[in-house]
Structures are given as C-alpha cells and as structure tokens.
Amino acid sequence: MSRAQQRVGDELKDLDAISGLHHAFSYIGDLEKYAIDTSGLDPNRTADRTRLLPAPTG
Image (cartoon, rainbow, N blue to C red; front, side, top):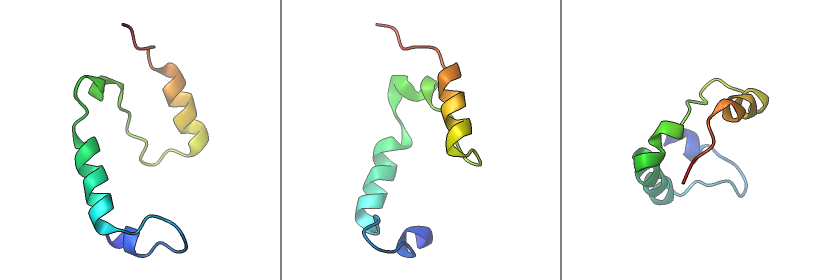
C-alpha cells in the first residue's frame, strides 16, 4: 500500500481500489494453473515465460 501511495500523476493511488483488485485476483479459480510469478522479471522475460505456457483448451 505504501508503494501505491507514493505514485505520482495519474497512476492508481486509491487504496480501496487497490485492495479490491488484490482481492479479485487473489484466487482466480481454474486459471490459477496459468499464473506465473513475474516478480523480478523484466517485461521481455515475462513475455518469454508466457510464451512457454500451454494454450488454454476448451
């Protein structure tokens, strides 16, 4: 939360909105198996990781 409060300009700072987003994405059901931890990954490495995931079926 402190990181959000330090944002500048038009970036998302509303703590209620951030808490709501966190709650909404804290459990994503059947999609959980497709979630990857992008902590410490730059955008290029994140893209590389997503390309390795199996395509959803159904």
